[in-house]
Amino acid sequence: MNADDLNAAIPELERFHQRFFCRTEGRAASRRYLTGLMLPIERKNVENVADQVGVPIRRLQEFLSDSPWDDDGCIDELQRFVGEHLGTRSGVLILDDTGFAKKGTHSAGVGRQHSGTLGRRDNCHVGMFLAHASSHGHTLVDRRLYLLKEWFTKDGAARRRLAGIPEGLVFLYPLGFLDTETIVMIPRALYLQPRTPRLMQAWSSCASRPATPGCSVA
Image (cartoon, rainbow, N blue to C red; front, side):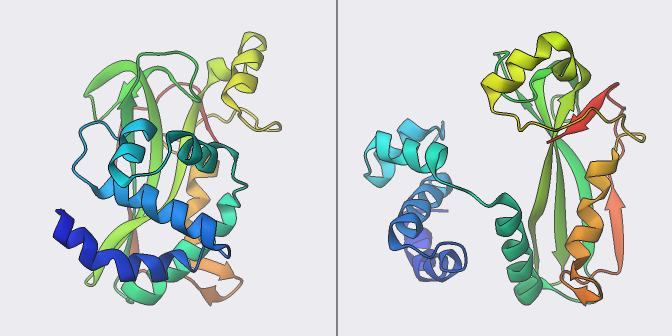
């Protein structure tokens, strides 16, 4: 995507944001952040994105870190939007994992585990993502983060607090490479309310990967 493509997409991006943000300030900050993510920046951290879109770094950091978010509400609204624009009776739901290499030990869920993206066991995050695909297009519609068993030990309590992992999460053994919380993404995507279709689909697909012993999700 180049600058001309991005400028042409701004009106549609603004309409998209109106579904998620009631206040003008939040809508503007989110639009600038997503604009930065779509630009050809080599390292898309807060500092580089803020520099490219012309906003103070601290203001963008505060928007990402301190703004109140209704995660479930945002996912619900995104899935409504995808259903309206991309939904067909022949749609497909696709579950697959992606690994993100990391060097540190403090960010949520990081640990030595198998990553299909890297093709080996390494220090990384592993996330499970649900996508919807149809003849009209494809996009992501939900996500989960793996939490290794080591994050639920007595020694892991301080790591959970430091990483901001919510209280009340419990360790779940995976079923193959899926755990029960990951599987919940599928019926959630299908029904906003009982018997009310959200994302129509004819079938679902799951990629296979070596199981990581002891994973949960956040």
